[in-house]
Image 1 (tube, rainbow, N blue to C red):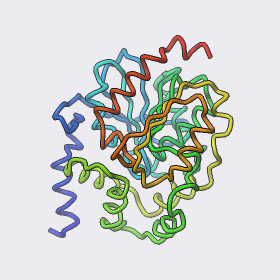
Image 2 (image 1 turned 180 degrees about the vertical axis):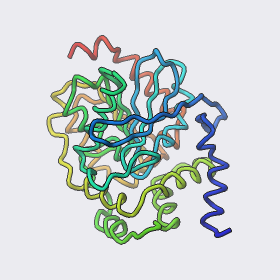
Image 3 (image 1 turned 30 degrees about the vertical axis):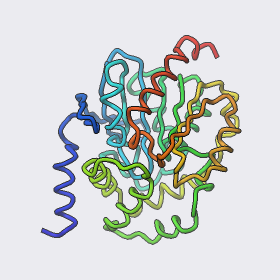
Image 4 (image 1 turned 135 degrees about the horizontal axis):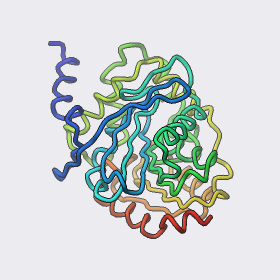
Length: 303
């Protein structure tokens, strides 16, 4: 067996991606149900659902090259109270990889169309990295559909990222199959506080689903996206969560996002990188649940 194939086999076995359960580092699990939804645009998205089917909905939007699995460390901790819906955004995971349609507006419309198909009038949206940029634009486009925003490892726009030119050049040079070394290096570069090796292996496996074409199209779409100017006036309760050792967005841009959203609450985790929900899942969930308690649905609806 070739080394790459052996790695994929081991990672799939370790990560339990088909096991129908999300497992976090403490050993807690929650049953996960998988389904697909066909949007009117013709794109088919997979999503993972867990938790209380009658609970308040929380939609989770993963980062660049990730999938629903990005949220597996926190789903067992949130699952008893909320209806958790973790999307594979277009191009990712087991969702469609259409030939076109990777602009930010397409990702935003996917989220709103997904909510329409599942008859979800409003939801709290948790977004990480790329998903946080999508979440900002969803709040700007349809504030009446968003109860709260939780933005993890976010910025004002991807163009402000560290070493934009170097990263863009690396992605634009990709060919199929995308090298496993590139994927692992990319994922490891976002982490400061160690995570479980089996979890990281499974994250890498999920990223191998993207073709070079999709890596490039998504990055171009993010770089072309505007800042979510005007989001503050939407009045959506917002929580900003960063690791102080975030390698993607410089502190200056994190501060710029705080200034753009002056009423947002902000948390900065020490000794933590870009993926706070991977590196500090218990602390992250505790902070999110406290934020939700302080911003009840009735209050959020009165804006």
